[in-house]
Length: 118
Image (cartoon, rainbow, N blue to C red; front, side, top):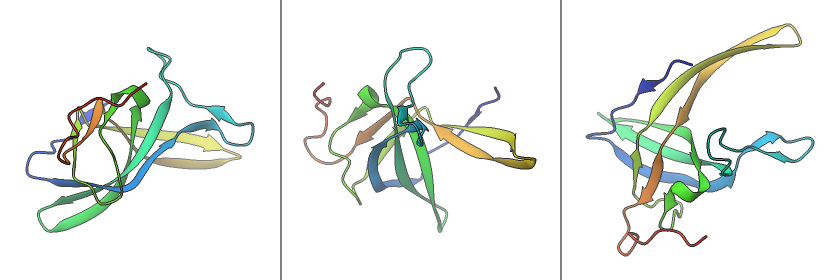
């Protein structure tokens, strides 16, 4: 799978929507997990602002790799952000897009340096 590193230097990153559990199969209630670690995956909607342009992207990260309180509007750092192009076919319809994955998402709010309790 091809991964494209995303440079976040010079960007302002804020939480647009707090973390939510990522579902592998919503209909059957199957939660998505990391293939390597088995940790539950979550998604965080991130407001990505750079060069006068703003866009909301959905970033997937393993639950233990979130630190601090990720309240809506809080400033964050996103470590190891990559873009992953994808394409699939469902019921004869071809679809494609870009998904985003990060190594960690960290709140930049005061006192957020403590890791999230397990």
